[in-house]
Image (cartoon, rainbow, N blue to C red):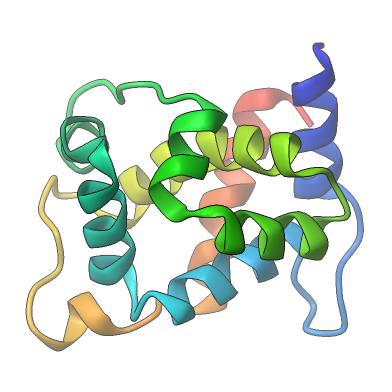
Length: 143
């Protein structure tokens, strides 16, 4: 298991916050709230130059990979700094964690290969749904 896998595994499985979520699930939930739901986050990533990758995450095929640096550039330094602080990692690790988590999360939140429309696109998914998606990722990593 590489260093990133160890960090990601610890964030996915390591304890819960006062909300009952893992620190990573809470950070992702906060990020979705700040962007106005899944549609806003997808829009920010698309405007940040990751449109083709994001479309592959939504579609029903394989998910295109992204680097932590690409995620950091798309979301901006303020968002990455906030995530890093919430997770207790440095900025580079925060970008790398998000580069592993976001493709899987967006894929899980769009199971039919379609973005939600209307009000559903601007709603933040229920924290249990976020935790379940991240739990599925933890299972894939063997954590």
